[in-house]
Amino acid sequence: MGLGVLGGAGSWLWLFLASEEATRGATPDGSGANPGIPLGLVGLVVGHVVGFLLLLMAAQLARHRTASAARFAVLGLVIGSGVGLACSLALTGGALVVPWPDAPYTP
Image 1 (tube, rainbow, N blue to C red):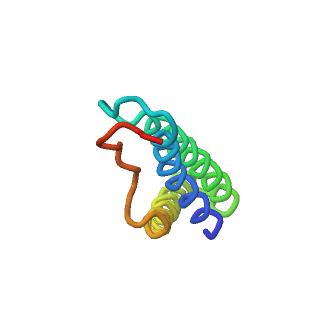
Image 2 (cartoon, helix red, strand yellow):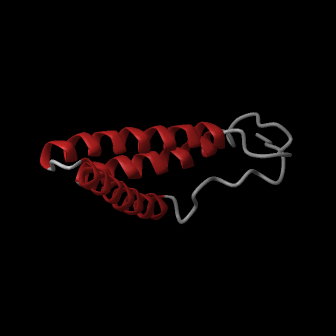
């Protein structure tokens, strides 16, 4: 479960970092959505899918019924992701993504 929490925190933190990186440097005029959010969402989804598959494989070894293993994997994923989200929010000051700047970037 500890590795799941680390994976959950890493995937939620990836969403924040991808949006944060897009706000640096020579950004566009600031209109529209933050362009780093889709990249962060892809990392978040891939991390959760890989985590679910690893949990499902581990649960299949420990439990003989597929339905029981799937329930265990879903519960483990939800708990690990929730704790990871809480850790990520604690590290980022409560921000899930970096807000897009209101003004254009000026060096």
